[in-house]
Image 1: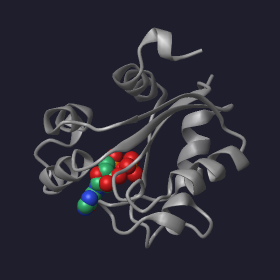
Image 2 (image 1 turned 30 degrees about the vertical axis):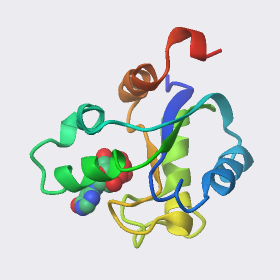
Image 3 (image 1 turned 90 degrees about the horizontal axis):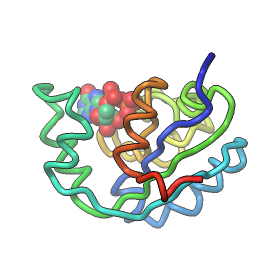
Length: 139
Ligand code: IDP
């Protein structure tokens, strides 16, 4: 059975452009419940750890520089089949390929500066929620 939690990150760029409110509104309108929320900033090595699976790819340096460049907002979101439903809401990695109405189509600037992250499997969702939130920070 699919899990009911996923991890979202409002990325630098979207935070800088004052899009925290509009993006959280979209998330709530789509029926996700915010179970934990944090405004923080990643160090370069933390961004590298979070995206370790992409190490060696041509976009890795740009991605981890970008993700550690300014503050982000991390959130644990709850809904049935959370990972798949949230990935539908955020849209394709490249905003030019993202469907109308998706968060990336609405708010992303480019394929790297694409406004938002969503976990890609239940296993990664658990790992990513643990990366950002301690036990006492979630309910
Ligand atoms: P996802 O965020 O849609 O799951 P992933 O393939 O896991 O996409 O890639 C992680 C992040 O790396 C993307 O959200 C995007 O910011 C960046 N990225 C992925 N592929 C490319 C690329 O081909 N060029 C530039 N940046 C990329």
